[in-house]
Image 1 (spheres, rainbow, N blue to C red):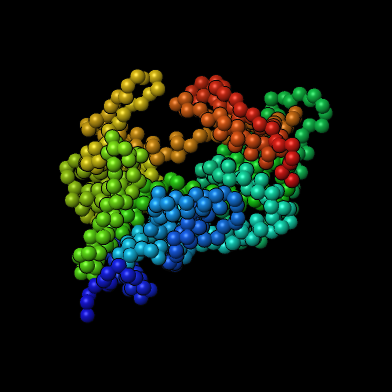
Image 2: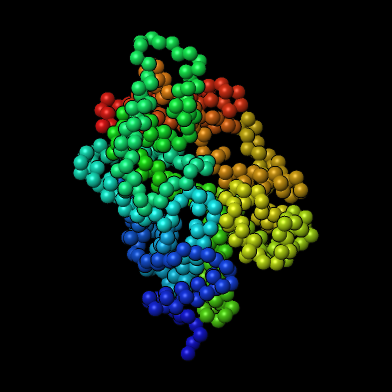
Length: 510
C-alpha cells in the first residue's frame, strides 16, 4: 500500500479527511499550535464570490453595496481579469475555512494547513483578537444582526433602513475603540440585551438634552464648557459610538443599526493591524507542514513541485522598479520574518546575538514565534524583530520623498544607524495610528444650534480630500440631525488649516 496520502489532482472527502489528520498531527505535535475546532466547507466559485461580497462572513444582513461588489468581482472573474482566493477563513469558534472545489488536492492540503491551522492559531492566541473579538459569539451575533435588519425593513421600510446603513458603512473606519475599554459582553446574548437597552438608552437621551439651557441668548461660563464635555465624554474618536449614544434625533431601532455596524467594524479592526503577522504566520505554518509531509514521504514530488509553485507565487516580491511593484507584499515580509526568527533562534550569528540577545541561540524557533504571534501587532513586531540580515536580504532602503524637494533622496543605507531607521520607517508604514486620519468629536453647541464639531489632527501636511470629507460629513449630519463642522487642525501649531461643514438633509432619517 502506498504511503502517499494522495496521488493526482483529484480530491474527494476521504482524501481531505486523511490529509487533514496528517496536517493536524504535525501542527499540534511538532509546531505546538493551539487552535479552535475546525469547520471546513468546500464551496463553488460563485459561492466564493458571494463570500467576497459580504466581507467574508457566512451570515450577513442585506445591503446594496454587497450586491454591487458581487457584480464587479464576478465580471472580472468571468473575463479572466482576476482570480479568486484559494480560501477564506473566519475568526470564529469553530473556525470556518471555505476552500474552493476547483482546487487540486495539493492546493486543498495547502489551504487547510494555511487557514485551518496557521490563521486559526493566530486568531485564537494573538492578544488583539483575544481582547477585541468574541470568536465564540460572532456567528450568533451575525444571525441576530441579519434578522434584526430584516425586521426593521419590514416595519420601517427598506429606504429608511438603507439610509442608516449607508451612513454607518461610510463611518466604519471611525467606529472602533482603539484603546482598551471594558471587554464587550458575550455577543451570544446580544439579542436579549437589545431589549434591555431600550429603556436605558431613552434615559440617556432625556438626561442629556434636559441640560440644554432654556433661556434664549444665555451666555455660558467657561466652567460650563468643561462640564458639557464631561457629560458628553468628549473628545470621542469612535464616531459611531458617540452618535449611537448621544444623537438627539435617532430612534432606538436606528441606534441599534449603528451598534451592529460598530460591532462588525470592531471585529475586523485587529485584522487591519496584523496583516503581515497573520499572513506570515499562516504562510510559515503551511510551508513547514508541506515540507514535513514531503520529508516523510506522504506527498509525492509532483505535489511538492505544485506546492512550491503556488507558494512562490504568493510570496513573490517585485523589485521597486518593476511595473508590478505596489509596495511590500505582506506575505513576503511576514514569511521572511518568520523564517528569519527561526534562524536567529536556532543558528544565530554574532550579529544576531548582538541585536537579539533575548532569543538568539535559544534553540526552539517555533516557541519564539508562538510568543511573538501572541504578543505583537505589525508595527511593534517589525520594530522588535526585523533584523539587519533580513534588511540586506530584502535589499531595503529608506527614501526621503518630500514635496518640497525636487528629487528623491536615499537617506538610510546598510549600516547600524541605517538599519534602525529603516526598521522604524517600515514599522510606521504598518501603524494605523499614523496611516488613518485622527478625527475626533470635540464639542457640541448645546446652548445654541446644537452644532457638532469635529477636529482632524493633521500630521505631515496630509489634509483630507475635500469631496470625500464633505460626503462623509453629510452622513454624520444626517445621523446627528443638526449642522456638523469638521476643522482640520495642525497637530504642530493648532492652526485651523481647512474647514468643512454639512447640514442634515431636508428629509430626516426617521
